[in-house]
Image 1: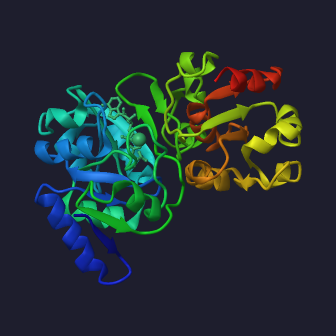
Image 2: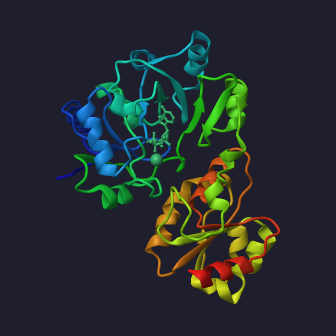
Image 3: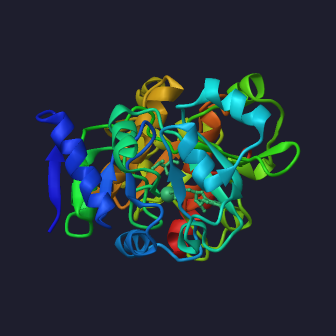
Length: 347
Ligand code: TXA
Ligand code: MG
């Protein structure tokens, strides 16, 4: 049985109840500023095992450890003095650090690696909960490979019966996951684009190497063989990304696009053959709506989705990374949109 707790009433009591559940080896779905997390006591291997079961997550995919002060960090990981001083100004925020782990953590949290991801989230409920029972190991709350969960309604729909408590706290602030950097190498290296921008990392912490793969292309997603692609953060319906804006507009105003749910900016919505889903114009709005709208696509009558690209600066890097990873087919610059029809005919 899953208990759903709304924090509007008896805030302190509710936090303590969630904390007691975690201390007892249970699981709690809680909001952060990025996406909902599915948490358990980071020092309790059996409790962490429940996370993998609830999410259907492969055991070789390590969890992020959530902290709410620097003392908690020192219990689980090594951080050098200079970085620690910088992070005192940067945290709480959606920037996760990959650091050398301490052996206090059970192997299941790190999937046996000698590193651990540390996150200090900027959300009141998360911080109060971690204060009361942390550190908390928590991946994103979605079932493995599904889009991350950005609202409590979806959390309840997806996880009712799979966890002990779901905190019902509405929509989260950003809508894309935290940025992860590997701090065990020099220069630091971006592992996942996220809500904390690369521009801010460079100005607040220092140089960080950004691999071209941060954009979200992978060997598999550019391959054109339908069905052979590994997708992540993905809706169940097939999503088509048309990167070139002119081609996108041409497609969404065409007759063929009537089979598709169109996801686009307000600006481009005027070209849509049928009522589109408007992601927003401001890139923060797009981030906020993206995973929510992927789920609207799954719930819609349309068999396919088509989405446009957005500029890749700031949080746009994370937005485009998620869109590409979620896409069944990416139609890149100068490629012909006929390719979509060809692929549809083949499937
Ligand atoms: O915003 C977020 O970071 C959310 C909220 C709940 O905090 N959490 C989140 O966790 O996105 P998750 O597990 O969905 O994504 C963490 C990513 C995974 O791709 C995992 O493989 C990677 O971080 N990761 C965790 N520990 C790692 C490690 N020691 N080495 C390499 N990758 C690691
Ligand atoms: Mg995840």
